[in-house]
Length: 416
Figure 1 (cartoon, helix red, strand yellow):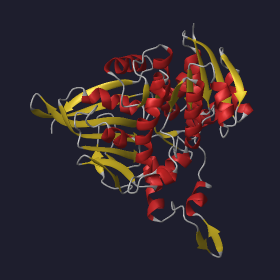
Figure 2 (spheres, helix red, strand yellow):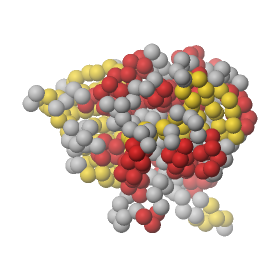
Figure 3 (cartoon, helix red, strand yellow):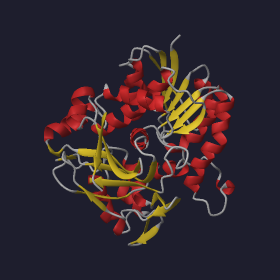
Figure 4 (spheres, one colour):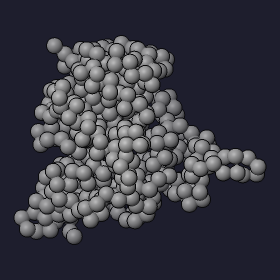
């Protein structure tokens, strides 16, 4: 008997997973649910196996009712609903997947003094929710988009070639630039929120905060036409690797996530000018919050087919980017450095294939690959894991499936 899936959220990520699962032989039924009935209708009318439902994600009872009898809940909602969806999956006795670790998973008064709230939240997922899912024989996987998610699966593949690991750097460059002003091809509110805060890094075996836009490094790869500046950026990956440094990452001591491209070039001067601050200020007799004022001026990320088509036809300045994992460690007593390059379709290619942007393609498809593991019974684990914790067999299946979508890995050993 085929699987029944509940997909909560019909934006770019949820819609892509729904479309990929509509093609899976082992899926019989997909429930697409969102607060916006029009968005649900627009999605379900192009699918063969889908039914629609309206849901208020503030209501644990509504989510639980929809989740009962399903084999998997895919949470593609904003982070604020993460705790509700996790609890609903447990109450319904089903598996769970999301695209990023939920926010505010622990009440503020329960966070130990001195603990970073977000880091403690990830620890809490692994210490509290993992045994609860294991107890009912189910699995929850968190952080399954492109970054975190696909990049974590690539990092896990890279470290397999080492006996010990000293350093991991995840590098993401977004070089798509159109003649129309599009500062972000993914959620501007998420992007700018990340830009506004200090980053996370693993340094000398400890998870620490680093200053946003700091610690620049420069790289030029053979498929890029210029040298790229990468800087510190708030992301999940160094926290994951730090928490699993001994169990999965061969004693890694240092880990960083660095970001470059049009988004950084747009946000960094705003940050230096104090325009990404969240505190209320007085300006010309008016009370304003600088961050909110800036966000009001930023266009949403393009997501509709006609909109993306128009942007492409108006003309592109560049259609490039990269995702690279650098690993330094030892193999057979010799120190080595590896670059693991992730190749994926660019904007024009993604649109010609699927009518979506490159960002939507790699994030949605990356997430759908984790879902594919669920519906084809390829996971051997129960409990709760972050996306960097796949087993050897799970990783092989993930990347074999990714290759069919032209998302591939290129492993290069380079001179130190």
